[in-house]
Each structure stands twice: as structure tokens, then as C-alpha cells.
Amino acid sequence: MTISSALNAGVAGLNANAARLSSISDNIANSGTYGYKRASTEFSSMVLTGNQGSGLYSAGGVRASSLRLIEERGGLVGTSNPMDLAVSGRGMLPVTTETGDGGLYMTTTGAFRTDENGVLRTETGLVLMGWPANADGTVPAFPRDSLAGLQPIVINASQTAGDPTTRISLGVNLPATATSAGATGTAQPLPVEYFGNLGSSERLDISFTPTVPATGSSNQWTMTIRDSASGGAVVGEYSLTFDESRAAGGTIASVTPVSGGGYNAATGELALTVAGGPLSLFIGRPGDTAGLTQLSDAFTPGQITKDGSLVGNLSSVEVDENGFINATYDTGFTRRLYQIPLVDVPNPNGLTALSNQIYEVSPDSGAFYLWDAGDGPTGSIEGYAREGSTTDVAAELTSLIQTQRAYSSNAKIIQTVDEMLQETTNIKR
Picture 1 (tube, rainbow, N blue to C red):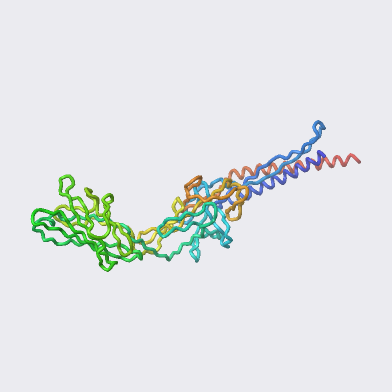
Picture 2 (picture 1 turned 90 degrees about the vertical axis):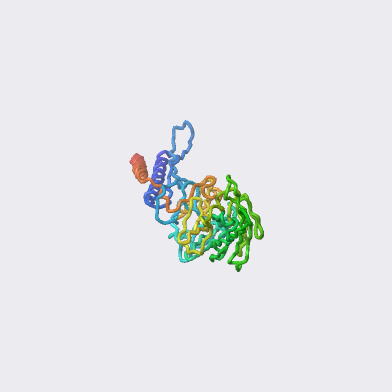
């Protein structure tokens, strides 16, 4: 019985070291595989209890168990492709398979490219998933514990987009001499371009007409605003009065609406309504030198700024550290297209490992949760990067030597037991 248990222990040792050799071989073979998580084989003893005091001992042998160390992170390797993605820290990218089975899989890195349909996928058929953004760039609230809302990310390389103007800022100086007695009272025109909802170029025709008194200076102007998209209709008329004191000379003293939207003294903005919708026109706050001023004798449109742009063609797509996919157009306009969440589970090492460095939820991993990148326990998403293999070749080669020696020793046990059994057989002779 004791000799037989020794034989069984030797066989168990051979099997255990063979299993360890398999994991070492896998690790070394994938030392250059992006996103590979090394496997570790651990041994645990098996004890067969006998009658105490009998003087007999039965060898139980050893049991091998292998574990994929998914929690370990490899170093990030820089690339030249903006859609080469890696996770710096905890969390994984949500992907699905090209077959469209609807399942959720996870990976820590991937080289994503658009296919003939614009779908972001890897060469192995993994399709990147994300939440679509609204037209204004906001991402709706989606459930975090289900796949509802997640969809394959599609980038249409031929897409065009425009950005309508919502705010214009005027920096203009009006001549103070124009409101003095004897002035001509000539209106000062100021055309200002803006962009409509369909990307068309429109125009606000603004005129400043001075109020000329019989004596002295009025420091008053009538500001009339016409919208080309509304057929030249007046969308606002305002009476402007400028301060002539030493402390705040030349700045706006008051703005009185005659028609159109109101004036907000706290923000210095007029609330206009043009053909495409609301538009804020900044003219300045009372006492503030920014915006409209009335100084000296020259009409000077110093600085006119606005948001929005004409229709542009897609020029580049990048992912920021928070997982937002942003498209940039050749007009300089940027638009948010998708948000990539990060998937996390309570026990990453309990995930089921599949081919191509992807994983799926198992009873040992716990349920998944979708985080915004950088929130909670998750890290950030890095573009232009791939995650390297977690294999340490030097450590694996050292383990290989140890495994070889252990395998040889267990083989020696079997050889010794065989010789002892041969001696037992020879007793009968």
C-alpha cells in the first residue's frame, strides 16, 4: 500500500509539473502578444490520513491548479494610430463579436479600425461598443448594470457636420464726437457673419445711429439689428447710453430695449431670436470696458468673436482619457460622437478567458458594472497606445528550469518504486 501510494504520488507530480510546463509555455509563447495575461500554476498537497500509530504513511501527492492573472497590467506601448486603445488602470473595454451574438465581452486593449461599413473593429473581429451622444454632445443616462444603450461604434469617414452660432461677442468703439451738437448723425454699419442651423453663412446687419442734440453731447445711440436669414427683418432695436464720468467714461451706462429680446446687465448680453433660433449677442456690462465703448472720434470694430462654423468634412477621430470619442472637422469644429464606458467586476481573476485576449462574466467574477472612465475604481482610456503582455520572460525561464528539475525528480521516484517492486518480486525466487 505504501509503495503504491509512492508510485501514485510520483505520477501526480509528473502531471502537476506537466500542467505547470503548459502554462509556462503559453506565457513564453505570448510574451509579445498585446493584452495577454499570464497564467500561473500553483501546487497544493493532497493528504491521505491513515490510522495514527500504525506506522504506515500513504503519500497523497500533489494537485495542480491554474489561474489566469487578469488583474495584472502590462506596460503601455505607444503607437501612431488614435484608435489603438488601452486601459491605464482598472477596468476593461466593452466589445462584442463580429458575429453579432449580442453578448458582452471585455478586453484591456485593442487596435480598432473602421471596416467597409465604418464599424470600429479589430482584425480578430472584436467590435468596440459605446453609448451614442446626442447632437449637442451630451450623453444620455443609460443603465449601468445592463447592455441597454450600448451599441457598435460606427465612424462614417465621409460625414459632414456644421456648428450653428449661438453666441457673438462685439468689441466695438463708437466715436464720441458723433453724438455732439453739429455732428452729421450718420449711421455706422457693422455686418457680422454667423452660421445657421444648416451650416449656411448668414449675417446680422447692425447699425449704430447717433442721437445728435441741439447743444452739448447726448452720448446716446440707437442700435438696430437686422437678420439676413429673416429676410432683413429687424430682430432687435436698443437705445444705448454711454457714461461720460471720469471714473467710467466711455462705458455703457444703460441699455433700453425698444424691440426684440431683453438686455441682461449681469452678463452684458442681448437675447436675440434669429431665423434659426435664439442667439446671444454680447455688447458689454455697464461700467465694463469690454464690449461696446464710446471714445474719441473713430468708429473701430476692434474684436468680434463667435462660436459655430460652416459645414466641414471629417478630418480626424480621437478618444480622450474619459472615453469620449471626439470627431474633428476641417473647419475646426469638434463634435462628441460616443462615450466608451469601462466594464468592471468584483473579481477580475474570476472572469472566463477566451481567445484573442477577451473575457466574459462568470459566477466567480461577479456581475459587471459600467463606469465612466476615471470614476470609481476605474482608470483612464489611452489612445495611441496598446497594453503589452504581462509575461516576464526571465521569470518564466527560471520557472522552466525548476519545473524540469521537479519533473525529473518525480520520474526518479517512479523509477525507484519500480526497482523496489522488482525486489519484492525477486523474493519469491
